[in-house]
Image 1 (tube, rainbow, N blue to C red):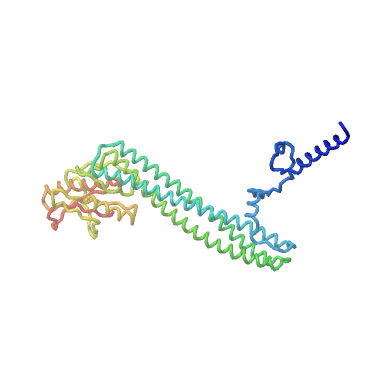
Image 2: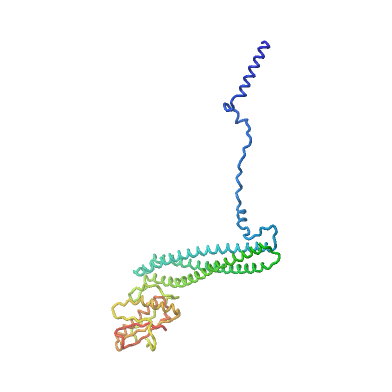
Length: 376
């Protein structure tokens, strides 16, 4: 091959190489993924999540702090008082929330308790079998709810003690604040913060006093409720075992009177001769029951009269007087029978036998047999 041809071939090869280098790079990048190296892309770095400890530190930062670079001894005391006040406020807030929950729980449980009691009494009023297992189960549920109210009362009393302790702490803080005003070496900002702390402490005491008053009122209500219903539910157990409260063939269905023990009725009297004569001089009867018809429904009025008397004087005793016209033996026997019925009614209400006395009296003014009830 001549030298001229060789130069021509070389020139052609160089031309082809140049065309390949100047071609559009988007047409073929077969090896780009394997060998190309791209400049690192700028990335947006998300801010680091704030830790729980950091958030807690911000939340617990002193509310009243000096912005000055100089920290005096008074500034340190202000920070300490601030921290203590915030801790007491935190405890009060927690106690307030607990109290709201206890009140709601007590209201819910007492509502369910009275629902059970009402259902039991409705069944007893209509008459049922002695020891009815359905009523026994309802009684157990009611008893458990009543026990829960006792627990709630204890928890409420505990809260009351905690509020008393918080009050002592706030009083001590106020005293510390007032003493700190006289400490030398304070800056103006220290005294401004002390005034703010004093105002906030006084406001906290007002809120605490309101909470304490509400707690005391709630405890009083709970004590009255538990005391009364404890007696009632004990008597209700006896009524369930009987299937009803029976009085001479009649059913006693009213709510029970406060009592501690249900006593056995004493022997019945066949006539007023078995009864001591009553001394009624200057005495006014609590109630007069006139047996002037075949069936006298005296139980409900008797219950109301006796309950009113016991509410005024819980330790009072009662005297049941069989009253009949003069010179009527039949009337005396009937009066004794009626007095037995009244006495048995009192026993069924839960009044102890030791607090019931029986006696007799004759009166010209009466036309039929009567039973008079006196306070003794």
